[in-house]
Length: 182
Image (cartoon, rainbow, N blue to C red; front, side):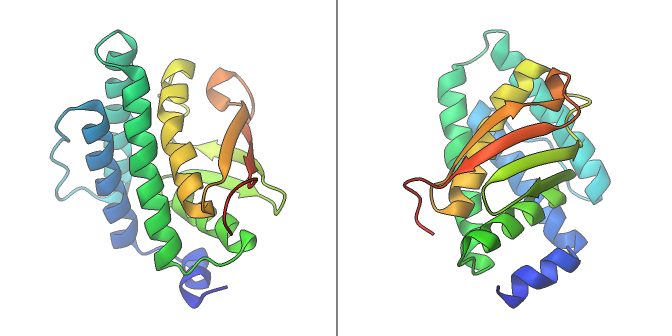
């Protein structure tokens, strides 16, 4: 395991989380074909709250017929894949265990408590988005999850089987590494 990865498991600097959230704003706005809001000067908590509301609003408008959902999902997946691949390089991810650690770090930056094991079983026990996202919005926005995991894992596929937004106590998913490079 790289030192960077180990250090971030212990502590994520505020500037790093804010930077990740600002990039998430930009990529989400681009995927939905709109301008990101001005988020300069906001602290991490406010950035996250604003992102949850912004992304929910974008997805709700798209679901109401204001946009091509398939195209939006593809754009979000590609952007998140690039973010995951970049994080993979920055953290010098080299093994399946590193991939899981990197995913936990990435999700912790956005207020999600993700737990996973080496077999790719994933559980989200706390999600900062669940209180604001409807089940339909959650499904639209999960393209970001799938892309991020694919980028972090070199092509792994994330599949959800349960979601908090659909009444489950936690989200359950599986990462399949079949065909992924590790």
